[in-house]
Length: 164
Image (tube, rainbow, N blue to C red; front, side, top):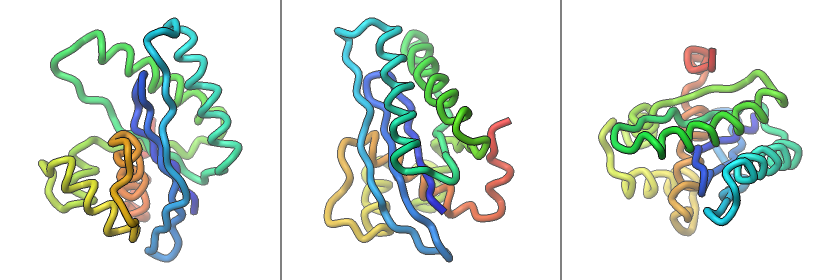
């Protein structure tokens, strides 16, 4: 099973692709979709949609896992990231109905075993679990890989995390 993990963002949308077979995971690729403040908001969203479609055609994931958004401080950031996430979800929904979502706490619990783990702990565990030479950079890509790993680890229980 090929899993695409997505860490939504407007300036930086992280993505990670893993292959999961018989309880073993292998890193396929990871990176970020980048947009700049010099681009208009509609152009940034358009680019995210186009780049997502390219990713889907390149890696042909069987299932796609997103991180749910949790914001408490900045409403403007929440709205723009939510728009970027929506565009990414729409592109993925046109490709498959196998869409899932996990909270940041669920990802931390699955990867480290502690729901309030620090980012560095998660990155170190991702590196260990996938036998990587170094921690994935930027952080958004590392987070996306963790989301994909979380989905793979959910096994048959992942049905409860399917987007409704």
